[in-house]
Each structure stands twice: as C-alpha cells, then as structure tokens.
Image (cartoon, rainbow, N blue to C red):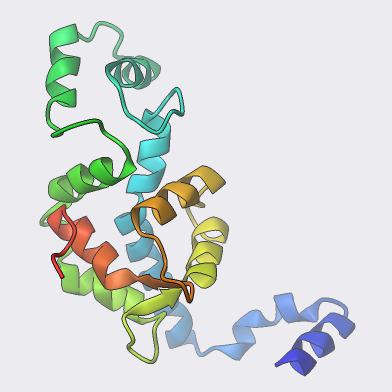
Length: 182
C-alpha cells in the first residue's frame, strides 16, 4: 500500500484528481447514498452544538432561549422553556439529547436502513468501523462535524481499545432513543 501512496505523491497530486477512476459509478452512488443517510442519522451532534450556546456540554433554559432568539422567537415564555427542559429525565448532555433526538426520529428511517448505510463501510460485516475512518468521513464530507461534535460523538459512543466503533449500537440509539441492553 505504501508504494501506491508514494507513486501518487510523485505523480504531482494526480491521486486526488483521479480518485473516482478507482470506483465504478454504482459504487460512487452507493457511497453518496450511504453518506446522506449517515449524515441524517448523526445530525444530532451538530444540532446539540448549535443549541448548547454557552458550550458547557449541557442544554439549559438559557441555551434554549438564546437559540430561539437567534431564530427570531424573542418572546418565549419561561413556562414553555421549562416544559422543554422537563422533557428530559435530567440534565440534557449530548447522550440525553441524542436519546431525545432518536425518540423524535422514530419512523424517519428504520434501524435496518441506517445499519445498511453503515454496512457499506464494513465489507467484512463485523459490525464495527474504525474510529479514524468514521471521523475522517464525518469531518470532511457534506455537513462536516466540528472537533467539538466529534468529541461529543466519541463521549457518547466511545470506540473500543482497538479503535473500533460499534455502529449497530449507534443505529439502535438513533432509532430507539436508548442504549441496547447487552
């Protein structure tokens, strides 16, 4: 594998311009569809960062007031904000937010559809994707995740010691709103 990289670099950067020649059109389309579904499924990370206005890792009443004001809703009653916060069983950190987000998403895409999108990245069918690979995809493609969003993702779904991410668990939480009991 190293000789190919060296050859590409020596070729004056043509590796990046010819990347699509390495794949068939159907593979590119399948990748784009998978990327769209993963992006939709994981967009909770970006939403959390937008709502957590003070960046303390917890969505508070003040955070909600600020984000609603930024969208033009200036006269939101305190009772409405309190009702929103009380939808959670405790402080709304990223994991709680993702759970709530998953509950709201029920019916959007079934779990098997989201799992199928991830399976494109898992040709051996192990149920895991390398953290580094997933992070590269999420930070360089479409709706790019920020460093903070990646930190939140890994806090909610830490990879194992070998750097593998259990994407089936992520899909379960997205579609069911809670972690699967082992």
